[in-house]
Image (tube, rainbow, N blue to C red):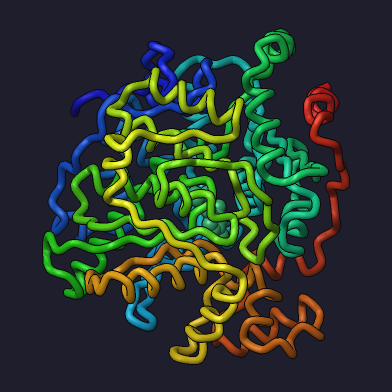
Length: 495
Ligand SMILES: *Cc1c(COP(=O)(O)O)cnc(C)c1O
């Protein structure tokens, strides 16, 4: 098998093995790691259709994580995709109102982040062993709500690791917050910051880039890494479920071998849809990558105009995990559409950090032709939940509803009849109040836990364990801080 190495989107010439790129998280020059080439699937879609999730995940990931042995990778996969998921299919497909919903929320924390974060701690501790790392790994994570809990659940009590999560104190759903602040594990810390997700992510990136701080911690026996989707170890596991979705449709005879599908993804940091882009470039027959945004439609505007401009009002919406104005992973796409020219990518990223915006050339814009951008505002999102429920009895969460709306809009606008797989990124139980209010505003009078019981009846689904767990769990984390205090908080935790 061809070895794949990783280098920075911004020009640092170091070429790292997959395991080192996963350990480091972010390149030294602030860029993101990208593979030096995108490998092609080496099994036919028909062969992959005969495999279970774990087997297929191995076939996809072995092509990217080439310095892991077969035994190492298979052990990581077996430990990740086990009974923590409430279905053996791991990522089941559900057909509703003319689209296929790929339910990525059957893991421990009931959001799609579990798909990668159940695996990342295993990839990372295996990487530490392989590379003879003798330091304790400190995972720094900024979260818009779901990454935080999924990363905490993945790293809690994992020997040789600690994890610090920063979330926007007033920018997550009540259930998201309760999930995080009740996290057990002596190696965990959860901090509410007085700012939004972009502030948290920028703060974390700044700490990663602080060489003096890194040297100080190195002396104390610590090394930083990231569990955000800037880590290539987050992205690679996400490629698998697109291949899985395609091969399930093939197996069930819903599509013919080689027939194209469209993929529609509710997008924030651009990680999930970038994974679909990688799947397409590995040879999966995908036609359009439909990028769905909420009111924070910075990506929609970028696909329309070629200008990325974060200088705008930030909206807190009912799909908080997409309330993002700086989509980190877009940097990887920029690198590709610039013809893998890292200097050009670095130039645009400098403009983004100094002016808050950049404009790509027409020749670069041509590289975006596989993408379609759309968005749904709050009313459209809410009405979509109500419509899908009334027409089919299927209940989707607010993030999935944004994608569902944009998908319908795309179909109506283009007349494209290609089958669509919509990434269903969170369980409706995670955003119960917004979901139930969409179905009937009368629900707003009830308490969060009453609503959960009502949702179970209405959708005829079992209440997920993750929700049962927080009903009575004590709050264990109460730390809050200002944006400029993040470093001190970390120092305090590592004392
Ligand atoms: C994180 C998240 C998203 C956005 O995914 P990105 O990879 O950041 O684009 C969408 N929906 C939910 C529920 C999420 O948790």
